[in-house]
Image (tube, rainbow, N blue to C red; front, side):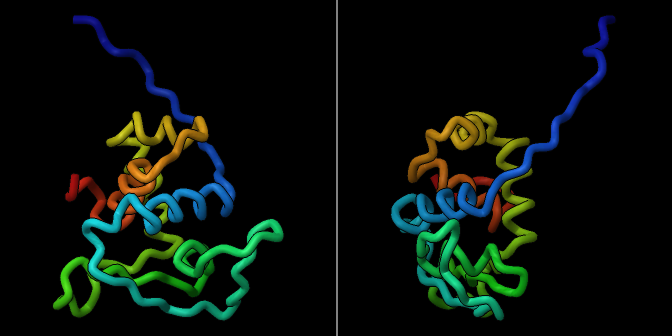
Amino acid sequence: MATSGPKFSVETEFTSLQIAELLCCAFEGGSNYWIDHIDYSEPSDISLEIDGDEWPRYCIYPLRVDGAVKIYVDPDDDPPKRDLNIDSLRSGLRIMHEKYAQHFSDFLSGDSDATTGDVFLQCCIFDELVYG
């Protein structure tokens, strides 16, 4: 019986700008069909800028240490399904890489679109694709 051999991994770092772009893809089109509404946990640093450009707070607050976007899937959710914050962003990237390689590849190659953003956000919130 042949073995598959050793496994190798490479750690990759992503910028806040890359993550903000993915979130923008999700919130401005890709995930609108399953998100009922959002709320915010305002961070102490409320600057909405990355590299001199201003971004919507749903793209910035999750990137701040003490900020978050609270995502409600059902109008009666209380508390919301999950906070979108730095920890869930990190987890979502890992899950998208492990479970949804084609979408992760699209992200790496700069071909992110509404679908890529939606897959990423669902990985962050649900740890898997639940919708679509």
